[in-house]
Length: 381
Image 1 (spheres, rainbow, N blue to C red):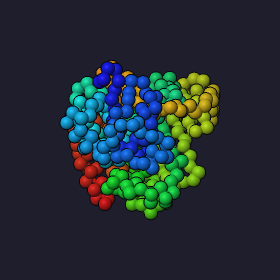
Image 2 (image 1 turned 180 degrees about the horizontal axis):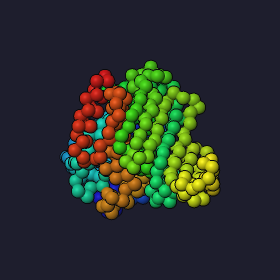
Image 3 (image 1 turned 90 degrees about the vertical axis):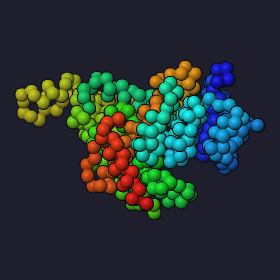
Image 4 (image 1 turned 30 degrees about the vertical axis):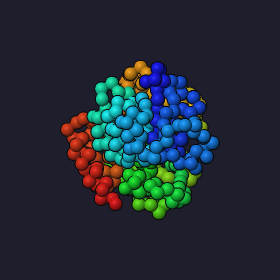
């Protein structure tokens, strides 16, 4: 690093890459500077009012950027990858081979195997992580602490209906890659829902199996799914349902988490938390008529997001790189695999019409799961 400054290239200057470059160019991320960009799209720059610094190296591709590094023409410490997700694995591996720290946009790729290979390719001590910016939201952090602490008892049931992802036909028609198996890898599960699936496992832990149903082109003229419903089971017996759609209007975003001794309801207009006055088991086993209702105290809280979530993620990455501590990241490298395991399992269950066991990362069952997913995925196009 040049002193304490992390010289950073943004690979992919589409919607998200332009946002990251704008933050770096404006000096809003302490300790990081914009050192180069690739795949510049003038219309994106214009839409954001972004003027690249004079003399900033601009490369047509990631390969051209890495070649410049190899020739000694470009000095870098880190890259931010914001290209289509089918390109993430190779670009991340190319960066890691050059000992460049990596911050990769979600998802890691199309298949969980890509995230696994990215983990395995990371040199020891190199800081690599993902942009899962919803982990910065105060409300989600509070809910996670409440669930993980056991304060309200064990998890019983989860229900997340997230159908406020409405998209018109123009959304798909206006892109050469959206809404396709080969280029986008899938539909709403892979494009809109990685953050929701990441939050689901980050808050509640990884489910162990699913039975799911995906509906391709139900609302739009596309071959991929625009609606998905998944039944989930957790190792301790908790159950859940995850529903997503890009075809409902106005749509809802409602997360319910039922625990032994309370209930959490989270929606865009606020959060409600119910706490039983005594453990539910005491009500269940007490003598009486059988119709007694447990008493609960309700708390109302605002839904708090992080208005500068992307800046916070970049600053978190900069601190971890400067300290050489990958374990300090909001979403370390091994986290990218989890949401992909979930989406891959949901797809696989829908394609096969069977309940699918979700393998633990690194388990003997994971290789068979990866093969089954990729074989069935390729049959879709």
